[in-house]
Length: 287
Image (cartoon, rainbow, N blue to C red; front, side):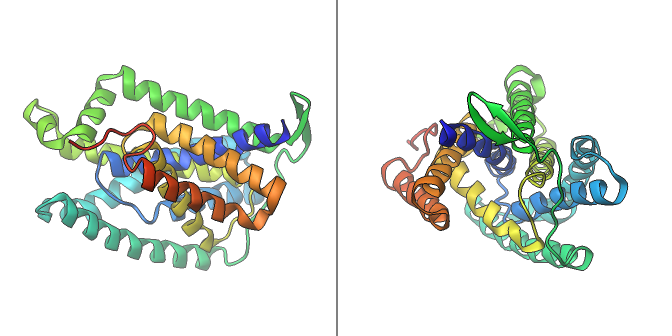
């Protein structure tokens, strides 16, 4: 039961990060290798707010979210949109955006090192609470509950609103979406900005129970890629399920085997999915 509860709490935090990347890659077709650095930026903002001004990380979400949305929209409009316009096919767009966001990740790491060169950690709700007979830290529980609330709201918006329907249409086929009057460029920018927002909010929540530093982003980028491919590109529901699976497996390996083997377990799952179900758990095989 300890492994189950802890794994679900960890998977809830992973889900937010993966949903952000899934929106950016599944809809806007931008493979954002700076996704992890955006997460760390969200964590750094929460750290600053708490240490410098005494602002609760939960309250800081109200500031981090809008700032991340605006910043991501600007990045898409001025850095990535020109690449989208000149790309002749999806393969060229993916190569160009991988290179562009790879360079952006170095820029963000350098920026964060100049702002906070040391590890950043703080004590927020670091008290034990009992859940179904298992003792967990209150900060992990609160982060998981907020992640579930954000993920549910995003899922409902995608499936119950006209804007969400437009996002799903672009995810399926940008060409067909354009034929029915959907502004594909604007929807892609919206999806990229929403993805950056969700990722930054995930970083703020993760910072309440994980010690971060400027170089930690690459690990979260890799885990987000594993989750997105496991769940199926463009499928938010798949990202949530895959994140929970990864959280459970990592917790089980860390508890039963060795904490140093959690990444090995993650990549083993990744390879298994690529070999036996390359379209992901909820993806559809290409015709």
